[in-house]
Length: 332
Image 1 (cartoon, rainbow, N blue to C red):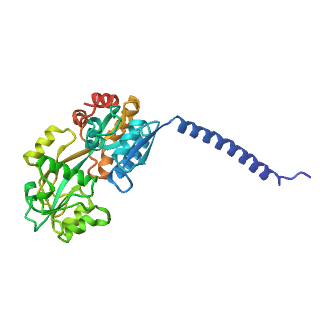
Image 2: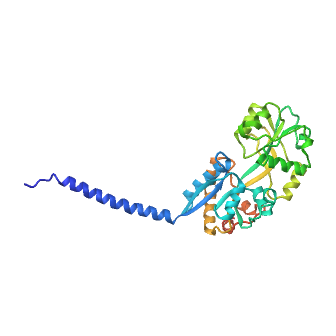
């Protein structure tokens, strides 16, 4: 006698076979899409830096909004590594400080004695400003840059961003170490610089980085620190002579105790690529970032893109990539 007991089992086996075939087609399709995508390596700073955070945010936006581009961040110890890897083709794009790019292109600073050139590098878009903020103790009687003479200052660890910033100020002001009552070179590691400041061992220091930041918030709130303008004639001469530097304003209210805007200066984090990166890819990257400018600003207020017209005119001493030129010409 024939029964229907085997029907469910036969149906289940056929279903599994059909499902396996469908999954193979789906897998092959997805693999094909991934294989056709263009992989982009984005050089950023080490984990914990704002460059790393910004690069991670940018990468997500590019992956979601730029067709056929897979962007992955690659952390490095600093801009020198990223510039060299970008020049050699190990990176496709990178976030580079405008001063470092200018020095690399003109063989200055850390690049003076390197037997390589960086002439194949091109800028895409300015991403965010990096202000140099003069921080002083409330009891130090410092209200201008010139008041630093005879005070106890911390220049930061040698070769650090803080030290490079202080070196810049000292050169334009024609100052020497002996012009200060105490010239410290304390690093930020283990909060050595902020501890010395809060305990009164030093009276002034320069903070380098986007605003607001937690370190400055701590100094202003717990150590009665104040921010001081750095906009004198010598600084303006520097800005006029070196396109890597720009005037920057720290708006009033960025920190709870800061009631007035602070006029200072600093550099700009630029998105940089090799001239070998094709025009269409660069165009897609810039387009994705501008179309999602609100998302960038929501991630951090420092990630506020300037207008396309202003970006086109922005000059940090390097040439624009043809893909950037094409985008800016079409988005006047």
